[in-house]
Length: 362
Ligand code: ZN
Ligand code: ZN
Image (cartoon, rainbow, N blue to C red):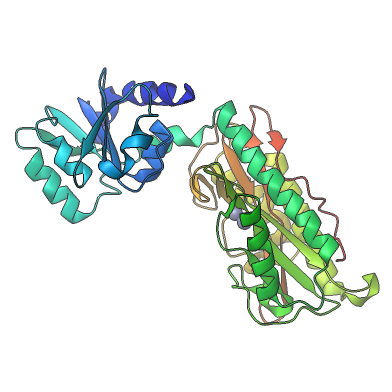
């Protein structure tokens, strides 16, 4: 087991002094969100929880995972017969922070019963804050997921787009990911012609023809970590695409590059969004870019920080974020260009998306 995990637990334990409401101290933190549990321990089962004190590390799961739990170093492992809650009786003392943004009302009530004598306080979002900055081990995994996605884009272009339906390409892309031992990090988007005008189009029976734009947004989850990349391609001969399509492609590409140039530690999500959005607005398409510029990527496909008009998140070196401006013309067509990058102190430290962004005819 990688010692990055024990460093994460230590970092979280170091936050106990301010983990409660209004930065008040807690004696321990109960982590029940499974993605956060995975982040702290590497455990990937469906029933697990961590109770972390300044010196103590208690991990709870049930008998199905007894073998897997043996691989978790540095934690006292307790195997319970049912839900993790059962193993907590007698463990909760003093002030215990819990993930109020994750726990159901029912579980919160059960927790209160189990915690007689202890004070439960709201302490959600602490592990998510730690998760924003990726260590080298995590960046390697995200880079590997991004590289597999790039490989798949290359194969897609070799295969060609014209003549297939969106749904056929979706099945082909997803099948290839699974053959490689990966999963789609989200259902791929293949949006052709007028369907490209919807940012979240679902692949359907529409057959892709020559002379149109096709937006493909996909990523894989590999060894737990996600990738995310969008490219818009053109089909048919170079002279078959109309001028409007060429224009919105060119504007979106400039917006993508401006956004990338604005990424740096210390910049807010809103400031970076505005730099990219201004390019689209000044070209006359401000109304046609209706979503935020980007998001963090890690164990989850969408995580903190956010890049968008109202985001106060200040970027930190070591975060991995997307930059994905788009222009969507209702009933006509659309373009989105998305890169996945590592934030550095003075700019993008590394762009993990290597598929060329010059308009490609496939
Ligand atoms: Zn995407
Ligand atoms: Zn994205």
